Length: 293
Image (cartoon, rainbow, N blue to C red; front, side, top):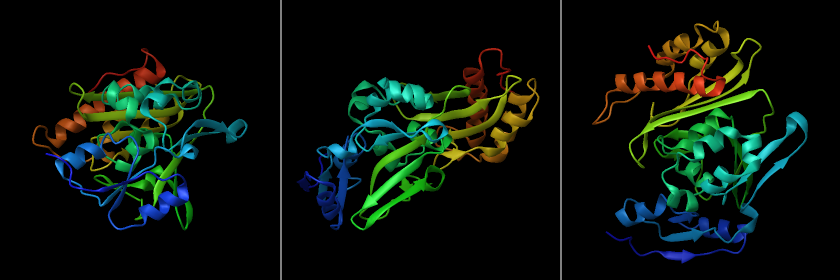
């Protein structure tokens, strides 16, 4: 199949982009790695494609601020491959770099954008889950102004987000973490397809080899990426010998995975527990008690 007819516009400024986006049926295109297949399958049929690829103000990765106030800014046109290769990302948000190599395959990573993945909000995508784990702030703009939405409030359902008509996700900001923070990213997928289940872990290492604080996020456990606060609390509160087992048990209180034609919800929960153990081992080292129940 081929896409229905549409107008194509490439604005030269954000203001022009906002004016175009305000038209009925207009859609933004950046990397196009999700939108173009949807166009060809005719699951979406915009009247106008607004290509923001020429807006230099939406490019770039940068660190701003000092000390504990440092933040990593990711512009709307930053690609997956930029995340994968950036020394700034490796320093300030290593979890993103861990996740980037899991995104689809090189051709997609070379064109697809980080913010485009967040905008799509697919529950099987890696970066929305990581944005939750890192407590990212999503920067949204339209011709009437700007606002910031926390990642935990951005994802509303299957490919449904807090973006309103006429709005554009112009960037993302994440608190830069220094030494002492640990990260784990593990997912299960077949070939280059969508992940079935995944776990992202972000935490501050404690004095006894565990975590003083931690955040756990899961993909494939609901109609959106979700946080697992009870599992994270168990990782921090439990004795080292018990932390993985108790966190895996607590995950059942955080998740109620939906079944699919090929997998029951119980199987998804079991896989999430196994991957949580592996994420802990990745974050803390092989000495972590990372076996599944």
